[in-house]
Image (tube, rainbow, N blue to C red; front, side, top):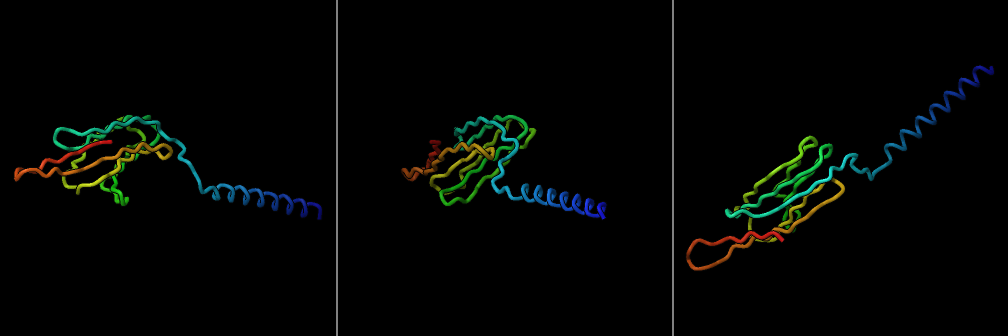
Amino acid sequence: MKTLIKSLLVAFTLTAVTFSASVAETSNPARKPKNAAAFQSSLFTTIDGKVQIAVQKETGGTVEIRLTNHAGQAFFVQQVGKRQEAARFRLDVSSLPDGVYQVAISNGVDTATQELTLATQQSKPVAPVRLVAVN
């Protein structure tokens, strides 16, 4: 009888500990990325009216580059992988309508944002000149 009670007590204790540990792991909704790679970025325009984005980061974490309009619609999304240290992108924004856009570069913890303004200058009946500015 003593052996049966001791066995049941050990089984119940082991079950309770296992259940509480599994509930504790799954109930953490605000998980942060394990490896947030530090990064540096630069954003500038070219003579052709394109946008050049350069990202230099540490290995071990990902970085996401996103170009969105004021309504939140994404026009460009690219992720730099864990093993990459550098990435260069040249975006052709000539097909996008005039307006203010936002370029966000994020590692999941820190986010660097830049405003991008597209405006077509109306002049004489000559071909329109497009202004691309980074704020």
